Length: 257
Image (cartoon, rainbow, N blue to C red):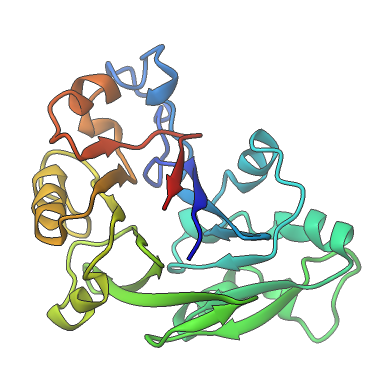
């Protein structure tokens, strides 16, 4: 597979950073790398542009990165901070005159039908988002010629879909991966993994757990995402990490090759 670009649209946890009403050192930091929208990623591969998740900041992220065309949306799971911006795909519907292909599990579909009931109503309102449903499970699927491997990870008791494209894997909202699903990560050169904070958490890897996970996979480069203000300031934490690990920040662009 030829090289492709990954853009970190957002790298924050469900509250984002800064957190409303918080005056901690991270939330009051003037460093742009400490400003984190909700977690999402853009994949630019061949002549295709995909987005992983459409969180509450989706519109702002699309405008910031000047995304003119979007070919598909891949959903990891149904939590609000990963689906809330789906309504804003209307702009791409209007521009392309096509329904937006979305790739999602049965569980995510149930969540979308609750959150965006008007999209699925028998009597639809003019101007609503138009989506083309593509159900996925644990087997590879193809999006416009691009092969994608789903990987089931666990967010406490909630299954979440991670994605592998060639030598790149993207894992968010996880704190456990079974041995069988770990096999799908063998040989990954670029790994994105969630690391919420330094203290342990019931449903996310903390920093130490994420570093142990990275050490087991041994990618050439790993990036930490889904960061809480409780992690600490970007530059300070980044300076303590192994040479092949970095905390991602909003707007970071990497080349997978």
